[in-house]
Image (cartoon, rainbow, N blue to C red; front, side, top):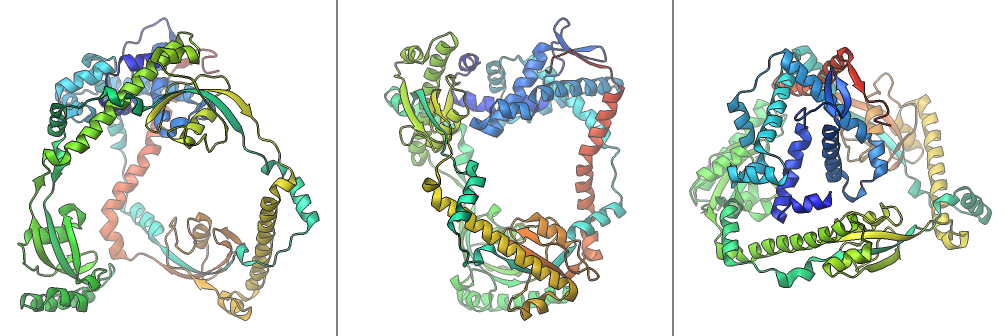
Length: 630
């Protein structure tokens, strides 16, 4: 496989393009192109799925998994995710959808096909579809334009079928109102937290320590260690073979001119009069009048910086409202439109944003420009040099691995490119240290391999490696004396947890009779705290990312204010009580209704589509070759 990649990947840039096009292939699938009878792995309504199709589908998923898991991808993950079944299921789904497209007489015009090709980023040059790039990318992927366009045509037909399925979706106003009310209702709670760390008087005796150690021995093992032999293809070793010409730098600059364009910018100050987002009209109007008064002072000649220090309610107040230099897209739209419409020295009338009313003064305007080639030539030279160095290192690694595929051992493979076999270890998951480019990355790759396995070429840091684990030392239980401090710390933490939970439960038991959390806490010399208002699923600053506390809070009410159980959270053990509830008002719901309906329709698509596809499968004749997925 690596040999094919190397033969069909002429440069580092092409490898980047291939990475992009792989995503396209993964999502388009391979369909029924070239299906032939005789090597079927399944029959769908008497239509065959061939072994070659299955292999391509499987490889697409593997590539997707590599991007997701990187060096951590191994056989265990593949088995857990049932990749073999996924690959076949994907092809079955494609056959069924294609059959429905035929039944519904779904067609795709040549213009629709052409437009879809124009939209694929991997086929663009300088942001525009380029025919030569299109042919090169497909050629490197061992595909002809005809076969790819047939695949794309099939994918577009399938998308049209999906659109037909989704066209039946609807969300009523009543559904949308109910969903918005449910998701935007806020609650606030009173709570008391018993933090285990606060229990400083925990004493640990020798017997308790020994008993705890004996019961938890498996936690106190040494780390696994590994010794490996490897070939290293370091980019620094190829520096004397790379020369980047001025013409190459100029060509790269011309092809990537957009990234050297500097947008128009302004240098400005502002004065902000804040307006709460839920403010009524009277509050908004009062803030606008205040901003108008300040505007009159500014255009009347008063020092804008001093006005900002006196009246502004924004974070730049102490700096005289100074915002520095910024591009149009750095600010919210109303603010940016006003600022960029002003000439240097001009002051805007009050401008409304979600933050309030702004009075803006432009200090200077900087026109759009393009960074000159001589300013970025060194940067471009480094970029091109790095790409070529990596390409040379990867090419040599590929040659060495080709030898391994042909039966060479590591030493013989090294001779092909003049590389000596190196040894590292024994080392833990932290890696062998500075002898490799990325110590932990190297360790992750090595520990994922089987003993005496020679792995594929791995990119680690900026270098490439072929690794062979040769010796592994398994973890062993360490004697108590070697881990006494750690065991003492763990036992202390456990005892602290037990004490804190016990005290929280005792407080809750007393609270159930009284139900006034603040009064009970005060009588015990404790202080119950009040949370901020929050919606379902929110991360609340007082609790951190704890879904249990925020979830149970919505089970409380004035009639049943106390949660009947102690809740475990990031700060310890919580006793919580209802304080208040705030529903979204009718105006807010009406303002967001259309967006809610669109969002709900999208969320429904998955379940509706899966139900529809399930019905197709129930009605279809699906025969999978016996034992194929075993």
